[in-house]
Every structure is written in structure tokens, then in C-alpha cells.
Amino acid sequence: MNLSIVIPNYNGENLLRKNLPLVLQAVKEYRKGFVEIIIPDDPSTDQSHQVIKEFIESIHDKNIVGKTIENKDKKQSGFANNVNRGVTLAKGDIIILLNTDVIPHKDFLSSLLRRFDDEKVFAVGCVDESVEDEKVILRGRGIGKWERGFLMHGNGSLDKDTTLWVAGGSGAFRKKIWDKLHGLDQLYNPFYWEDIDLSYRALKSGYKTYIEKESIVRHEHEKGAIKTRFNKTTIKRIAYRNQFIFVWKNITQTSLLLSHFGWLPYHLIKALLSRDWSLLVGFYFALVKLPLILTSRERAKKFFIVTDLQVITQYSL
Image (tube, rainbow, N blue to C red; front, top):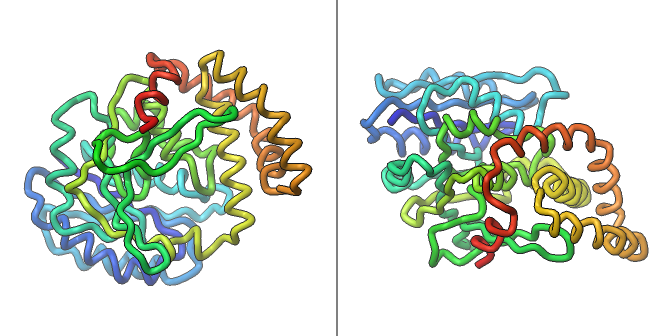
């Protein structure tokens, strides 16, 4: 089984210097196929390009190759675009996505990959040792519920191995299904919800997603590009916008659509009265994208064979 490890970068010079050698160390023992380490670079303004170049030149293993691809067009930036750009170079059977702020444990691959013996498995997530406020919290399993017209997502306990989504910062994906589903949707750029969207589409298309408790990575969220490059107001606005996009694109069950549009006036009026401008601005920017959302919706619907409630009910605990 050949592997393509995709590490999207944006101004991650320091993280790359620290973490790329650790990624290389973690994959050196893999001998069941070749390994690519692909580092797509959004328009970074630091020394990322040089660090990536030096790293690729430092790989002296006939089983491992380094690749990079640069984006010089700011209009084409964003997490989804950057990951998809890296995947265009991928030759592996399995794509492994790692953020620049993720450090894999040395033995994270073997347990992660064994799930793919089942051809219906689309994606398998790692357990994150998530560093938050200098504390380490184990995360990785996603759950969701339908509430007041929206899919509300959260972290589930690790006593089960099923997950509503596999995180785009620390997970493995079967490339032939990735290609079939057209990968991450750029509607969600610059970040958030794109990995939930992809996993949800896969589940509605009859595929499976898991969390592998024995595959562990350390995730230093506070050092990532989102927290260091965007303010809280911008992050909140984008999260709201993408929450609307997700529903309008993916929810096809009539009862849930009626629920969403029935609750919509309540949410908008409440936001207006409480001066939650982030929600209102997020709604507006989602509305601007409506033609693109509807086009993406029609493309996704072609593969759906499972209802929304079947998916949400299965992954609600």
C-alpha cells in the first residue's frame, strides 16, 4: 500500500523546521510500499519555501520521496485549495493529511492503515493529544445532532471507534474515493467544516469512517496558522458562514430542510437583538455563495444513498 502524506503549509516556517524531521522519522520504518511527503505551500511570506526545499533535499531514503507545489495566486489560497493542490501530486493509495502543527507518534502508521483492509472504509482518524492552554486533551472522535435547524457537532468519547468525520489535520483517506467525491470543497475556504463536509458526503454515499485509538498524534493547536493569523471575530464569522453552507449543500431530507428554514427567522432575529454581527455577516456571505452552493449540492447528491437522519442518528453518541 503506497502512501502520500500531505502537509499543507502557510507561513509555518518554525513549525516545519521542528516537525518535518519528526514526520520523516515516523514513516521511515514503513516498508509495505513507497511513501511521498508532499508539502503544498500557500503564498507564504516567511522562509517556508527554503525550509521545504532543504527538507526535501535532506531525504536520503530510496523508499521516501519529498515533493512540493507552490501557490502564487492569493485568490486560490485556503486550506481546502491547498490540500487539494497537494493531492494532485499524490500517487499513493492512501492520503494522510497532517497539519504543520501535528507531530505523529513513531508507530502511528501501522494501526491507522489496517482499517483499510475493508474496501468500504473511506477514512480513518488519529487520536489527537490536543494541546490546549498547556493541557493535553485526547480528541479525535466526532459526533453530531440535529438541533434547531442545524447540524451541531462536537467531540465524542473514545469508547467507540465510529466517527462522524475524520479531521483534515490528522487522518488517512482512500484516494480513489477521495477522487470520486472531488476532495475538499473550496466553498469552505479559508478554513473550517471542509473535513466534516467530506466525511458526511462519504457517509451518505455508503462509505465508512473510523477513529483509530492506537494511532496517536500530538496536535499543538495554539501554534497553527488559524489561531496565529486570524482574530476571533473573523474566525467566528467564517464558522457561522460555513455552518450555513454545510446545511444548504448537504441536507436533502425534507423534514430537516423544513426544520432549518423554520428555525432560520428565529436565529436571525435573535442575532439581531443580541448584536451577534458575526452570525448575520456569516449568513450574508453564505447567501452570496448560494449559486455555487447549489451547483456543489447537485454534484454531491449523485452519490447519496443514505438519508441524513440515518447518518446523524448513528453518530449522535
